[in-house]
Length: 228
Image (cartoon, rainbow, N blue to C red; front, side, top):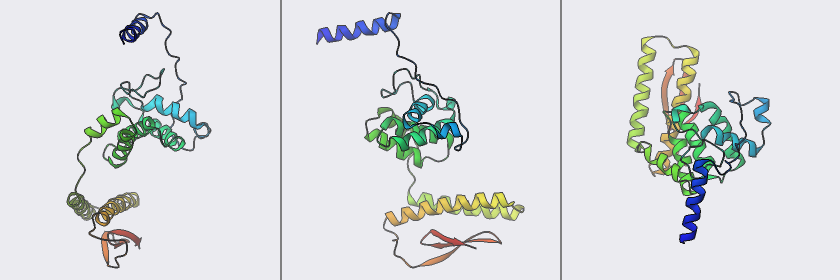
């Protein structure tokens, strides 16, 4: 035991004073901004994982590969590049807790208001052995209850109606609101079903809320089934 400890101390001392060779630097990949970038699309799974490590790893992560510096501050991450590289890296290796954490981190930086995907990735990574994922998971705000989510939906509806009354909306604004409301309503519907308050087989349907005079969502159990 004593010999092993002395050996580790000696190795650390050699590294500290530069007498041991440093770990080889990892390959570097340029920033990307388009999913359709041919060079990005041509990368192998191993290359995508290396790029994900480059853009989203944390210096304090024990799972971080040798030769990778990591990005200490979330605000210093190239969010779009990290997201694009890590999304495909996760597809290439879906059982890698380091990549799970890094994709969650990239997603959280890119979409600061949305924490569902990062929370899921941090949980999976932590269960897989990523200690730093547990730290990031603990820093997320508590999950909202069904009542809080439903209140958010009602507030969103009221805000949209108020904006519509104040001035005419452009087509792009209407599209953005419609997409946002579908995502929110779908989340609430899923929670309602999971909590037992509703079921997939229920036949009750109700009218949705007006986005504008030309768009009306049709809801069944909170799920958007169509619009006209």
